[in-house]
Structures are given as structure tokens and as C-alpha cells.
Image 1 (tube, rainbow, N blue to C red):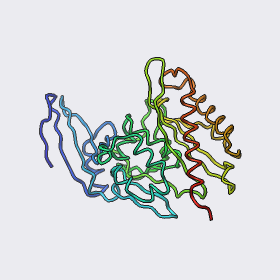
Image 2 (tube, rainbow, N blue to C red):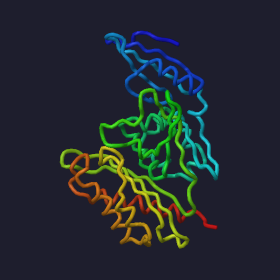
Image 3 (spheres, rainbow, N blue to C red):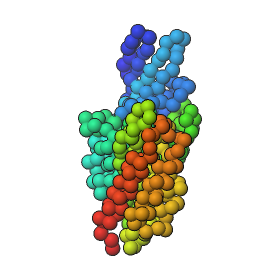
Image 4 (tube, one colour):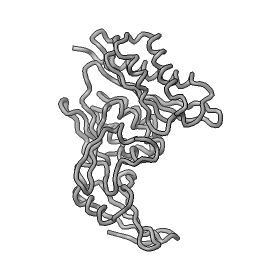
Length: 300
């Protein structure tokens, strides 16, 4: 442990390196912070108050096995510890081979020099560019394992982004890992980003698309489509998903689905767009890339 004043506000930081989940939970419980800890790379940061002083506790998570595992098998799918850096994730063969839209998210969102110090735990709890990785995770039906003073809980990644102002994790709770189910046959996805021009300022938008096809590799039997950047939280375009299901993915169908996805943003847009055409084109790109990836994998 080390500590000391780190600024004119007399904020004291104490550093710990727990080796188990229970030890980390006990330290957070003793801190008695009114808010959940904040993940920053491979650290958890919790803040509390003692009189007029703000106290800060930093937990180095690199010795806790559950937070640093990266595993895949055909039955259980992919499990990613919350403290695994994006660079390690990108080097893991099953991610590149079976979950390429996750690799899209890592490389599209962050500069290469940030990949070694950015983690899923940090990205999902941070309202910045790296939080956009939630979009492909939602399309992959990922779930999050959470640990805290009251033990374990599990929730869909989609449920981690409720309405603005609502909090999901409770004081003392932290993300342990994420689980993506094994991909279904004839399925794949893509995540693309682009800059959209608004009436006041431009904004970065992202579109994630996941498709499941019939044996003809043209008819869609399942779709998930999530947009980010244009709404306060990741947004699933349910109308476009329903439209795609059961239809042959010809150009006219893909264009109609892209139009439905862009149109569904409507009044929820974070900034008023000059027009929806760039968002439609971004969505069309994601659909086309997901379709190409499904067809690129040999079928039995």
C-alpha cells in the first residue's frame, strides 16, 4: 500500500493489489463509496470522503485471475476478463476468426497506442469513444458478470445502458468479465464508424450489424442492428431488425433496412443531422460487410 496527497484539494490515494475477487470487494466495502468504482484500464478507482477531504483508492486488478482470463471453446463461447487489454484481445485468434466485429470495435475506436491500456471494463463504464464497443457486444448478445458486496449477478450488456441518468451498477459492484455465446452457423457481423455532419457540429457515429442466414446464404433468419454516437446510449433499431428477418438480402432490401434504421433515430438524435443519408450509407456498409463475412466462411 502507498498513499499521499496528490493535489491542492488534499485528495489522498491509496494503492492496493488484491489477488481475489473477495479481497477486492472487501476493500471497496471498507471504502464505503456512495457510487460504484470506476474502471480505468487495469485499475478500479473508488472515491469517498473524510470530512472535507476526498479520499481515493486505486485497486490494481492484474493479479485477479477472473478479471484477466481470455478463453474460448465451441460450447461455451468467448469469455473476456474486464482487465484484459484490447491489444491482447486483438491477438487472440478466436476473436479475429469468429468475432471480427469485436476486432472492428477495438481498431475503429482507438488509436493503436491506446490498445495496451484500454480494457472492456474501462470502456463500458466510460462515456467516451471506447464505450462504442458496447454496440458490437449488444449485437453478439453479450452478457456481463458483476461482483460486489452481495455476491454475483449477471446482466445483458444491453441492460448496462438504460435511460440517461439511471445507474445499473451499485456501490461496491464491479464488472468481472463478459461472455459472448458461440456463434451460430452461417452468422457474422461488422462494426463501422463514420463522421456525420450536424447543423451545429459533426458527430462520430457507429453502426453494428449481426446477421444469421439460411443455407442459401442470402435469406436472413435473424438480425441485430445497433447504432451509437447519434443517441445518448447505444440504440437497437428494432424495426430494421424485424424488416430484415425472413427476407432475401438483395440490394433493395438492404437499402430499406438502412433507411428504417436511420429513420428510427429521429428525435432521439444527440445532435440534429443535416440529413439522414450519411447514416443510411453507414448502415448499408455494415450490412454489406456482415453479409460478405458470412459468405466468406465455408459451409458444411
